[in-house]
Length: 370
Image 1 (cartoon, rainbow, N blue to C red):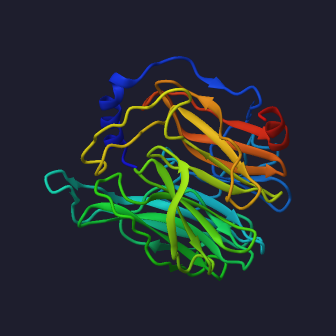
Image 2: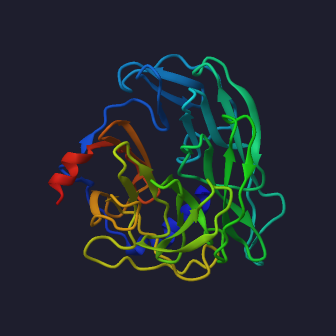
């Protein structure tokens, strides 16, 4: 989302913040890698990533990286959750990204509406030779779209990613998914998910999704309504027709949902309130229609063994009082080894960056946090 708008939010929240040192749960290990997300496991067990210079490979679990192979222009490497990399079952690499080349965002505060010409398109490009060359660079969703938290391939072979999309009258965000049935060569769009709202950080925003054990898709959606909303697709993301509150309390911040290789679902997010106290809601009229919680001081984690019907008790595993740890990225490097990287990690909300890269052994973590 727009950093200037969020800096304004930080100034307004200053009276409510208390600054102390960062804390990380003792069951969490630090991750020794020299690059940021996203990552992909390659066919030979090595690790791949893309940055502003191109595609790189690491043979030592992320400590050192190869020279880059150019991929595309238009990446904002300082904006987390703005691009993802996927390796398909047929060994095609698919890269989906927000293209900032012609980015434009203007908001009319008098009308509380986006001005004409707002633009942040979603593009996709792919490689058929595991990163040596890249083809079919194309726009797959026009208009103004922001951060997203999934790029997956389902059991049918369909590639799917969820996005929010700025609309007007009233100004707000709504959700869709884009999908490909030919290894990322061509793309289609689903129906829109719209839960209303009014503001440049209101509506249905910054979605994450997983495939469930029965083949349905589950999407969790950031809202300003004190919880995630959820959507279910029964036809692989072509249509979303079951849309309802999820019951998972959350602040006005995104989460990341991932299916692990053992079948468990894992969710990392910012809960509605910090442990032991209530986070005062902010009445930011241009942001949201009603007062909203912007709590981002703690990251919590929960697991589900029944496709999200029930969840383990949320465990706070990282805390930055007065600052923020938000926009999480999850990656299963190998079975039972989960990498967790908050894209925004600041000591004072939007100031004094202090990166944090973590990993957990899922089984050990669950045993130690019972």
